[in-house]
Length: 537
Image (tube, rainbow, N blue to C red; front, side):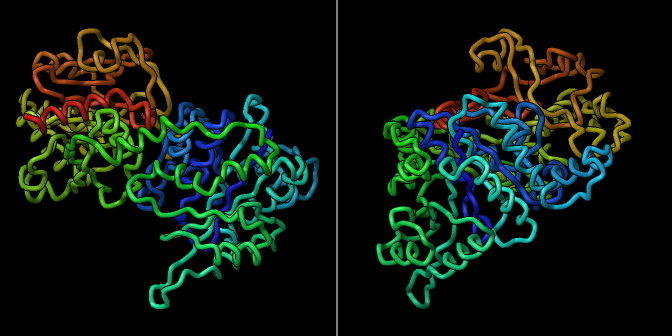
């Protein structure tokens, strides 16, 4: 097993996750098997209880782990299927260490940061290695910024780990910032020098430095960074701002042959140059599409790009599949409540209502679903968006005035959406929802079955507490609502649709977590296809 550790310096949000994922892409295209991992220094056990304003979207894995959104990049950019073993937080580390101490596993010793906490961090890398023996390279990204107090134990654990497995099997990559000072008209290397100096103080000498830059990296600055940071000049790599899509990142890093630098450092230089033709074709379809559609996304965290990151990426994947640019109009659900759906949403080719929690903006989302249904605009509801479509249909087609979810109105006259039975009595908020991949049955003759290729069963990832209330199932079906999928285990409603509508479909699960650049999720592909047909009419 070979190991790559990706650290970051100067400022946060430099794109360490994209850099790590891009390296994984390049190595996979060289024929190597890679596995990605993220260490987050915050004290939350996982990001599941965090507001999107704090941390962006929560990305859910097959095994139900609620993780950092960078794991979404990892799964989209590489072929690896990740598990809870691939995301570690300080909260998990300290929780485990304290439980071991309470059980007496330290045999009466004084429990200390070193070695007990650092040993726990190193143990996670050993466990991932043992569980995935076929992997050639494990790529681990360290969240935060070098020099932060909260990340010091992770850096120390990496230093120790490199000595234990042999430095010839480890490649340290440091991502840093090259700011452009407009008044001086210069790119400054000093922040990079200071960041690397801090990393070296902690006992780690980077093998490769990735410089985030708005412009290119000229040879004078490359030479200066190499000299002051004690690396070879060829190992100073530019990571430029890409013009159109994040999927250009592997191609940009390839310009400085970062994959060659990595395999040479790890003794894997015998691998062939990456075959990137399929990736390049996908990027070209994103940049130069033949068609265009406009899709409104109506949500409550709409001003945050990262709140619906996987949904936006899935729309890009589906758009490229149909050689179509998807222009996304972000619609604040509360604005619909104030001004009406027609005024706020206007003339679009599709409307998507994503997942979410809480009652803010709910009535606006319900208006958006009604606007799509009545005007034959393709509609796609995900998780809460499926529940919204159910509430709207119950109110305005079935005549159940006052229909609602008990999440928003515990005393609703017609609770067409209600708390799952197994959720009743649960008090802890973290990791207690219906989470992860579940098997569902598709019913033949439905739109959903057609989109999935008429297979009988599907596996999709969930993250919700509330569900379609089966007490109202017959009444809604009699009014024309079609249930096209239910869970295999408990018969919970998974997909609803309207057969007389060009595309009106709601999914209780999160299909965005299983979409890939060259393999768009079938529901997203179908939605974009319907939007394209709508635009051409």
